[in-house]
Image 1: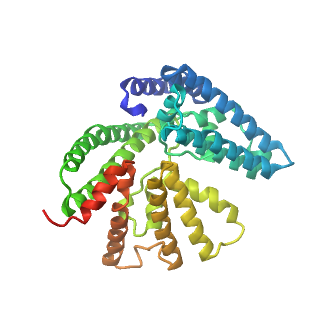
Image 2: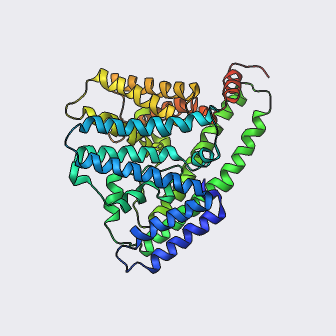
Amino acid sequence: MFYMHMNAMVAMSGMIAVLMLTRKWADNKRILMIIFSLCFLLLFSKKLVVFYAAFTIINYFGFVYLCRTTIWRKATFIFGIAANIVGVFLGVRFFVMGVFSSPLFDAIIYLGLIYNVLKVIDSYYFAYFFGKDGEVPAIDYANYLIFIPTFTSGPILKFRDFMADSKKPYTVDAKLFEDSIKRIILGLFKKIVVVTWMTGVFDHVLKQELHTHQSLFLLVWFYALIYFDFSGYSDMAIGFGRLMGYTMPENFKKPLFSPSMTQFWRNWHATLGDFFRDHIFMFFSRKTPSTALTASLSILIMVLMGLWHGFTWLYFFYGLYHGIIIAIENIFKLTTVNKKKVSKAYFYFRCLVTQTLVTFSVIIYSSNYDTVLRIYKGLLHFTG
């Protein structure tokens, strides 16, 4: 993660200073950003730069071809997405599972290639639905794929929004500058102070013999820890991204006040949830899907989101668990709650129920079978 390296922070801060000093140059952020991004990656690995140069060029040609072709459009579209998923996404996941190893793949995993695959997919959707009108210059496409502030862990940028920002001149006023700096400082505080302290407490309690109250504490504590960890990173990415002249979407929108699991996933890691909903439901947008189809798609989307986090059974069941709950909400029309039309007691009761359901599953993010099983077993250990 870039934001835990002082040199990376200094480099990004320097880039912002350069953009501010050259703001009268109309194309400063388009040209300077691609130079900065390539040099930035070069500091980590020469092989990484070569890989991303090839990755970007190949996908740009695929993108342009999809924009221009009038034959076999759907086949080309599906092949382009499948090639990225199979050739890159699964390859990285298999590395994590220990199927094979390579210093190059080690660096790629560290820098979050899976986020960039999602961006490639979004660009292919754009090309497929907009055709020639969706074609963009190679420099803007490259900037989109290797945009440093969101390179490792999001938020996931939408292709359409990034291209719209690329056409605008670099402008950062005093208000935006102040808000962005505060956002970066808040993110640093969460990551360096809060998460470090909370991790120490979590590890200390986990070493003890676990009974019901300890396991309940660990579930709640880990949920809070993950929230500060994820949102802290997002705060820094959003702050730096905005200072570089691009609009950054919010990734966490008060998820603790979500009265349903459906709304929770619109507020927690919102850009990831939006990505999977947009790119699956898009094919069913010509007509309103039935309740049964919506429920089924909800399960599919959540399972895919689970597997995106990790190609393991833990994440499969994590996605299935959330998918089933969202499917039930769809079937019984419980997906949304209008705070203005219900009592405060009912609204906050629904929020409490949602957070309870989330709390019992979020420990999966530890990605450790032993930890997960120990905590769940501890819930049934009532003595002590």
